[in-house]
Amino acid sequence: MTCTLSSHELLMSASSLDIGWLLDVSIEKDQAILWIKTTDERILKIVDSYESSFYILPKSKTEGFQLFQILSQQTSVKKASWDEKYTDLFSGISSMKKLICVYPTSAQFHRNTCK
Image (cartoon, rainbow, N blue to C red; front, side, top):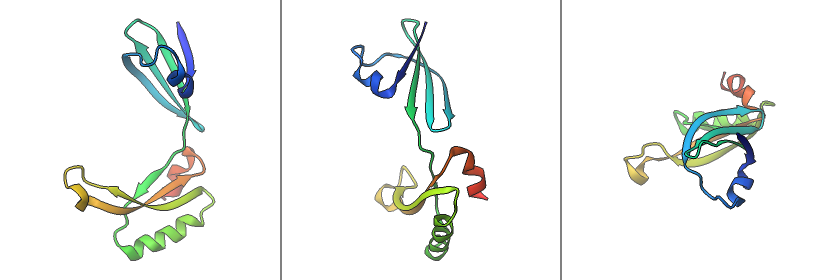
């Protein structure tokens, strides 16, 4: 038996957290789809909204500024922003770096945006 739920429906359901195995994850247009098999043999299909993004660590501040300007003007980029993120899990605060976060108009534009 397959049960299709949105992530909101799953969170609001009475059987709050099911235990199981993640079988598959896929992205289709603007949705993420997860297939889970629970310990009581049910198959859950969880559908949630998905916005693709990726981060770029520029070589220098100057190159980062230039790249940010170029990305901001691309039609395949919905939004570009500066974010501070940890780049090394074991170095603590010293590993926080300024990265460019890029939100392409669609997941299929990742390849074209990166070129």
